[in-house]
Length: 380
Ligand SMILES: NC(=O)c1ccc[n+]([C@@H]2O[C@H](COP(=O)([O-])OP(=O)(O)OC[C@H]3O[C@@H](n4cnc5c(N)ncnc54)[C@H](O)[C@@H]3O)[C@@H](O)[C@H]2O)c1
Ligand SMILES: CC(C)[C@@H](O)CC[C@@H](C)[C@H]1CC[C@H]2[C@@H]3[C@H](O)C=C4C[C@@H](O)CC[C@]4(C)[C@H]3CC[C@]12C
Image (cartoon, rainbow, N blue to C red; front, side, top):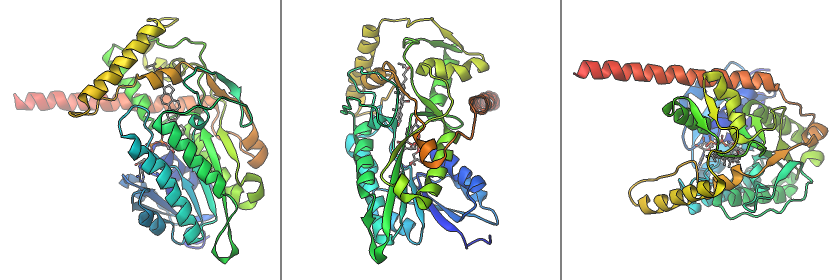
């Protein structure tokens, strides 16, 4: 296939953790495309060099909350994978901003699809549109049909739930020229893998405490995790099959899953960190839950007191503690049944890739330290 004869895909948020893996996945495994438009507020120029003689990677700087930017990016495209989102459960950005990006941004993508005649939209939703709720109701190896007391108060899960509802309601919308808009929504659980910002934070924290991690959550609390490469693979397959079987996938939601083991959030992270010399202190939480909750409340108070001077957004707050302390795991094969999804990466491969990446962080940290030390020496 010569460049230019294939389809044009748009990946919103394509420079992000998931988005950048998705761009690479499309380049490697999707033969029907000639251009990938990477639409993002913060461009990663390194993606531009991924272009090859078959597929052009075109970086487009824009704000998803500005309809004109989105309309321009979608003009002439065939399909959109919409991953752009403000992922914040730490109070880094105001609720209004989260809503503007995650909900209004999604409205803009839908509006631009209808105006530009883009027929296919795959939305990156989240497990959080379901839960866990802050009442501590466990979701134990549930699936897309499992009944659950959904209760959202926090801006992020609220925004993802609203956006997903808009996407699903838009499925079947008639467009100009008699074309129809087809949409589906993918719900990853906690994504891990190369480039995961939160893992970087845990790693840095652990380095500061002599590679010791201190258990805060009971090991019996399972938290669903899925490898970023498999999430990207599922998006690619959903995009491909939505075009072939729109009546099957249109208007459907799919949890993203693979063979990653069911473990507590902390023990799962230790699958990688222990290979880098880290150890978990405590076979059960080192402090009682009420003390953790008081600490979380203190963090919220400090965030409020300091917000005029700088953004204080520690990992632990009442919401993240509630989420971490509530089992949320999925067990489903809906994506396999509907569009033949099977994980591209087995657990051992996903684990190996993630460990290799974390070890590369250590090399980088050491190099930075060495440069710092030399720098200090030169300045003396
Ligand atoms: N990370 C997870 O564990 C996880 C789990 C479930 C679902 N998700 C979903 O996956 C998607 C990607 O998440 P991620 O972890 O890669 O986050 P990320 O922050 O790494 O990527 C999000 C991207 O969106 C871009 N973006 C933000 N605001 C924008 C705006 N106004 N206009 C254009 N682009 C904008 C960012 O620059 C970034 O590149 C999100 O929709 C998120 O809700 C993530
Ligand atoms: C400090 C300890 C209590 C530590 O164990 C806290 C972990 C906590 C920060 C994470 C536990 C579960 C995570 C969330 C989950 O993986 C799913 C998510 C959905 C996704 O769309 C966005 C990220 C997140 C909300 C994720 C955030 C970190 C946790 C709350």
